[in-house]
Length: 65
Length: 262
Image 1 (tube, rainbow over the protein chains, first blue to last red):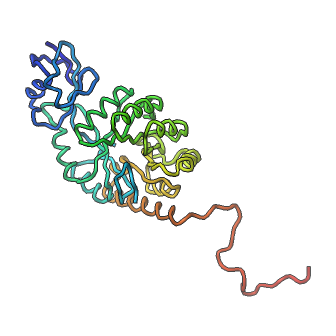
Image 2 (cartoon, rainbow over the protein chains, first blue to last red):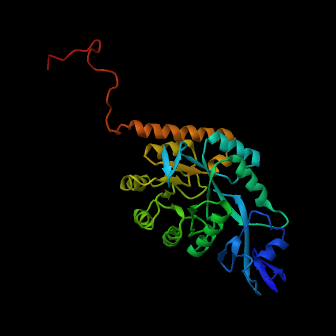
Image 3 (cartoon, rainbow over the protein chains, first blue to last red):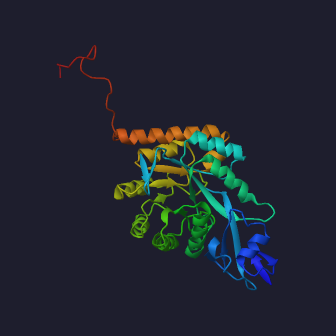
């Protein structure tokens, strides 16, 4: 399936959000996630299935004013 | 002592973490500023660069309380989702709520701001809204549950100082018991001192320090200006007047004579 990962087209067969994060090397990383504009808590990633054309955001701490 | 959502703070200067030339420069500037709260943000993380992971390590070393922002959000929905990601990421219910209306002025979308503040407060956030000096928006934000307000001095990064002092004075007078923090548009330590002399509770700034020739020295200058401004407010400023008033006693002035001829 093809999803939009952080605004870029991305091909994956990860069954859920947790699996996608792990495959990207984020299993232990300081990240937060959203799917289709809504926040998905870390504890809910495993029960969040991915479907074609999902828009996924994976964010991390960054400098800010 | 400044109290924000139950947190007692000694410093009345809040510092942003963006635009520094190096992590070391940021660390030294925060140290020199004496700030106990630093603002942070969240951005898309690349699986390759993993930029955020290193930055988080630096923030933890600073030992400051973090105030995450929702910078760049254009709608209440985006800001709400971003705030929830920030709460999980940074482990704080505090959020510097930004809903931006215009790319050139970066002015707050007051309607979206009130909408997002209402939802987030209901969901247990402690919202510090980046707003304008508008009194009606401030009233709505307080009604929505905001216990702190952060009006701008001028557009973000503009270094213009307190553009609308009259309205900022009104806001201060109207909300004597709500902590008011001047956020954005401060360019010089004298701007910060002026805000503090007006009775504002604190100042939040970033660019004026980060982009200074010597950010560490400028951080110290701002710390002193904020402290001096607060001290002056507590001491009670005299009122300006149109005509001169001699400071040296008039009585006993040598060579003084009353003109008896007239």
